[in-house]
Image (cartoon, rainbow, N blue to C red):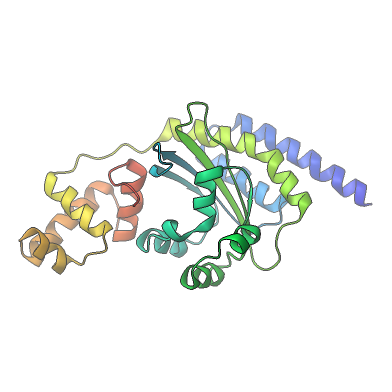
Length: 246
C-alpha cells in the first residue's frame, strides 16, 4: 500500500512538472503552486523573483502569492523583517533548499520575528530556489505549515519540483513585470520617507511643507501606484524598483 501511495505521489509530481512547463499565466501558475503545496502537505506557499546586485542585496522583488497571509506580508515590508529573516539571508547567500528548523537552530531569529511568524502559522517550512543563467535574478519558493517540520520525502519532492517552478517564475515575471509609473521629484521624496516609516506630519517637517501638503503628495503617489495604503505602496514600489530594500 505504501509503495502504491508513493507511486501515485511521483505520478502527481510528474504531471505538475509538465503543467508548470506549459503554464502561461500567473493565475494558472498559482493554481499549480497550490497543488505543489498540497503534495508537500503545506498549507501556505509563496513564490518570488529577487533581482540582486553584486552584494546579493535584492534590488527588485516580484511576488506571486498563493496563500501567505497578506497581513504578514504587509508587516514583513513595513517592519523590514527581511533584514531579520535568517531564511531569506541564507537563501541570498547560498541558494538551494533550506529547512527552517535547521536554519533557525544555527541562526536563531530575534524574538519578535519568531513570535510574528508563529502567530501567522509560519512555524515550519521549506524554502528553495535557483539562480538564472545570467546570475542576476533568483527564484524563491517557500512552503509553510504549523507544527512539525518537513520529512526527507517532502524535501525530495521539493527538489524535484523546483526547476520547473523556477523556470515558470522567470518566464511569467519576465513577461508581466510591473512598469514603474512616472513620479515627480517630490513624490519620490515622499515615497522615500514613507519607506522609512515617517508619518505625514514628520514628512511635512522634513520637506518643510505643511502636513496637509504632505498628505496631498501622498494621495497623488497612491493614485499613480494604484494602491490604497502605505504598505501596498511600499510593496509596489519595491516590485517596480522605485525603492531598494535596505
